[in-house]
Length: 385
Image (spheres, rainbow, N blue to C red):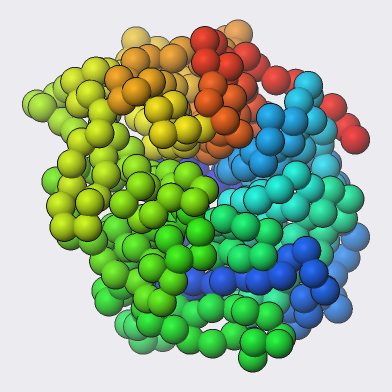
């Protein structure tokens, strides 16, 4: 199992670092296609771009079209519709031991925002970068030490929301918006939640006025403020908001258990209560589906990993939902047996349209990517650019 970052727990959350006190940071980044945004204060100390790294893990993927996706993790790769091209990662501040690109959002081809953290002996420092298809541009997001960004959602090329955590000396939760130099820079806004440790780990935005943040709680952004949604009775693990939909149009992947049997379900929140929009007993889960994406209102996929109890191997797991009916969709892995214990898992998924999705993760110590065409998954190869 990788010593870099572990994402095999039930909720899919990172367990690389145990944080005793949390600070939520929610950032809106504006104008990626416009003038350059001032770089964080550490930009002057940057070294050369990070080398290609086919070993490791991919934590997230975003597909703007069927011929363009960007996947990130301990390395980065872009999809051209036929193959993945390994990319040099963004430059690192001096003293960086490891860089983690935790999440990515591409509102258009060659127009992506990547967030994560740089790890050094001084602690973590937030990472926020714009990829234009050729080069990386650092984004000023109120960079801070002992902090990281875990999620990002860009419903348009001119507006993004990002979320993350940081250590603090007191128990408090803050949120903020970055709206560019012309808008006055960083400003603190209403918090998405009141409890320390109630950290937003997943984000999905249909527009600048419709976002959902997931953590221990479900929080909705209406363009002015965050509001916590009441409990659902299910284990909500991920959310998908299609472009242009209202908050009530966002759907959630939920897990429902009866005894030792687990089922998947697609949930929606109508403003006052939760309701199922899927077939709750349509798919008996053999594994842990922790990541969810929809190419249309009627076509979604969920991915994660499962354990082969006879051998102890962990292998990829996937299922599909067509018009609300869930069914298994076996992934192309497991790979041929390796020496020692097998560990394959998906850590992210994105859909460019109905029956056109990419899932990424790791296969033992190597990065992994597969595509779903509505019928089957196929494993993809990687080439150096």
